[in-house]
Image (tube, rainbow, N blue to C red; front, top):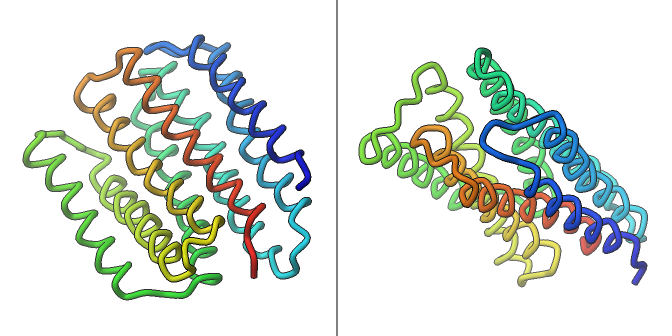
Length: 232
């Protein structure tokens, strides 16, 4: 198999390691640039995977996943600006959440078009989103304030993307592409659970920063790599 996608994946791992060394709780221009490079590489991985996958019928899947990844790239930049410019943090957080919400819609579209709709996945997503929001709000006492609607909408989109990806993996006999999508979706959810604690529970120490970003980038790279193994 052509090694180009894995060369990009390796470059992404190196870039992530360098970024994690530079990133702290206050952010910096240097860290933002390194983060942008690391995020750009998961978009590059999607393109490299598409070029190597010679199976016909992959184009629409690639375009939808690539758009989701590009939204992630935009969201990554905006959310780091939130850290750097605290006086406008609420605005940047809103922008970042919108970018990731739209990204999950693109991922969902790819999953629904290629692997079919499931009422079970939809209902499970609704239940999961309600549980996550309820625990955050009533047990952990997080105050979402002006980001309440953003949080509810994003929690559902992320939950639905995850349940739909898991549905695809099960119904497709755990094909490599669907396993990567499901793994990416689960890692995405775990990453965001850590991120919520950094935003609303002052868990912004270096270990939390490293865990959050490691989970997040593993998620995005797994989703991008799914293009390489898609068989229509």
